[in-house]
Amino acid sequence: MEFPGLINYWIVVVLMMTGFYIVIAHNNLVKKIVGLNIFQVSMFTFYITMAKVKGGTAPILAEGIAQYSNPLPHVLILTAIVVGVATTALGLALVVRIRDAYGTVEDDEIEAQENDR
Amino acid sequence: MEMLLDAVSWLLILIGSAFLVVGGIGIVRLPDVFARMHGAGIIDTVGTCAMLLGLMVQAGFTIVTIKLVLIVVFILFTSPTATHALARAALGGGARPQVADSPADADAGEGDSPSKT
Amino acid sequence: MSLMVFMAVIGFAVARLRNLFGVVMLTGIFSLTSAVLYVVLDAVDVAFTEAAVGAGIATVLMLGTLALTTSEEKTVSDNKPLLALLLVTITGAVLIYGTLDMPYYGDPTAPIHHHVAPRYLMDSAYETGLPNVVTSVLASYRGYDTLGEVFVIFTAAAGVLLIIGRPQRGRRRARRDAQWDIEHGIRKNVILRVVSKLLLPMILLFALYVQWHGDFGPGGGFQAGVIFASGFILYALIFDVDLARAVVAPRVSRFFLALGVLLYGGVGVVGALLGGNYLDYSVLARVPTDGQHLGILLVELGVGLTVAAAMITIFFTFASQER
Image (cartoon, chains in turn blue, cyan, brown):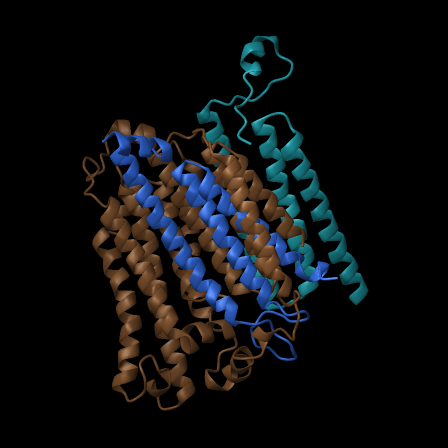
């Protein structure tokens, strides 16, 4: 059936949902950023899995190789990885600033402080 | 000649993998932080170097071998340094090596490391 | 694939773990495992970048944040798990239902292998003359997207500077008295200092090698910039941050941050002035292939400069915060 062909996508979905769960269910801001990172890596894996061709090699032209894997998703993911780390850096800077402003990095405590204001 | 080279490289890679497995089991099962670093050290030196030597035999006298030699040199530089830094940090964090059979250290040996797993 | 199952296990462990320090370490391992997975899936450039960026820079920044915000052991209190689990399960089920129509893993007749990719693979050899198709696509065929990406890195560094880049009070000049020497001096960290001083030139040299070798093998501007920055980060971690700041002054790193973007945009403008389109490299030299080589070289240099300067700036901004 479709089992061996689609199992990669299913594991990617599992990873994605793990990251999603960490983002929405945990209160600590740093942990949320970590969950976002896991989500991003699962997306990258999804694209790279789509790019792979059975029997192909890395897309570096060399003598005697007939089949290459698709280079276009690789380019996309290269960009996405660097953008991801830029976003993570910015997010962590925001966490540091929030800590300075509120004294905590727990989401519910921050909300309580905001509601008390 | 080909078969001899293949056999030697296979042997080296298998030895390296065996040491990797042993080191991995050691990291999990040994009782103390410093003993676990032993396991990590085994993985980094014998395991990695044996596997890379096996790969070098496979690659022959090409530029790949030179790159592999550089990798081996780099690992031999950095891995003991990393273990040293880890041990120093563990000492600074308050872990003391578990000394099994000296009654004078009975209370100090009892203080097992706050294991960070 | 067992690697992906391993990654899923690590993901679960990250979700369940409460000690933030362990979570950050597991994230580094997660990135490294995904880099290995990418090599198995033939994406060598992507694996290089993920290993350098994900397992290197991201881990260092998260550790810096942990040192600045919370103590090392902080418990995480999650108090709405059931609703979140329900939502996650429903979304996951819908996504899995969506993947049922997708082509099988490794299928060569999948639609994405039939439109633009064969053209890139077949024409890249005589249009750009580079063996590494990923570099030629990144810098030449899709150069506009890469320009946008360089702008994103620039903006991230500028954003970090704006958010937490206050002038450092009390750390402006490094104090080098006897007490400082006992605590931080050469006698305390001999092994680390000697080995890092031995390795530092090799790291910088390797960064330069990766930068220029990106045309022929895995590599290119991003990886080279990150490796270059990691050399400086190593120096700052083992020696004092102020010493590293003295080596790379903030003005210098900001200058190179802007210079890289300017170089990239400038190459595009020069291409437009010489009669082609914006970012058309074929008009930069008499032979179009040489023009492509020159254009890709300059553009990758710009990318490398900006990425290195951005990572250095971000790390030093994190590291020179007051505690």
